[in-house]
Image 1 (cartoon, rainbow, N blue to C red):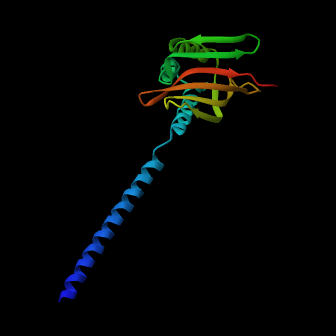
Image 2: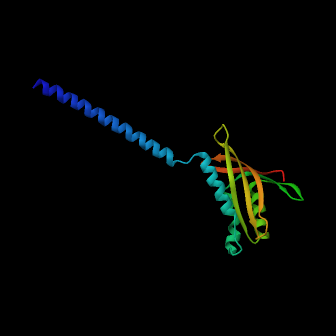
Image 3: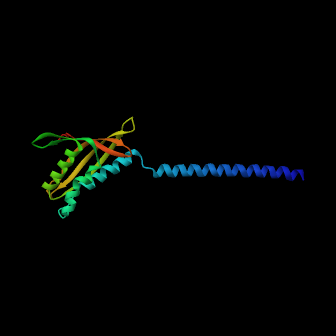
Length: 178
């Protein structure tokens, strides 16, 4: 009988160890799943930039309402103090300061073109040490108004995290050798 009592104690202790081990394993699996499903900051920035390219693209058959809403669709991608500095062939560098001017420029371009299909390729993200700033380098490929030669331009984009969103603070073209 004393043998049975000590055997039961060992079984009880063994069952507790198994339960603890299983609980720890489940917690580890849950943590891994959450980690895998939570996008990295780099992924969030890439997704945001690709979404901007999609929102900035338009076709020749867009409705009048879509044309009017164009600037508002882009508003949420830019910080209030956003700056756009671009090299325009034959015109030199042009700078635009403030979100309102950037949106006004985008709307002006929208009204001058019949269509624009924009893609961002080869996006490389470098997060700042502060965790709330980043630089992105990419190639903008644009099919504008059905022209024979697509526009290809290297860009450097500076972003800052406000609340939960990454907003563009600066876009500038990068000169490349041709």
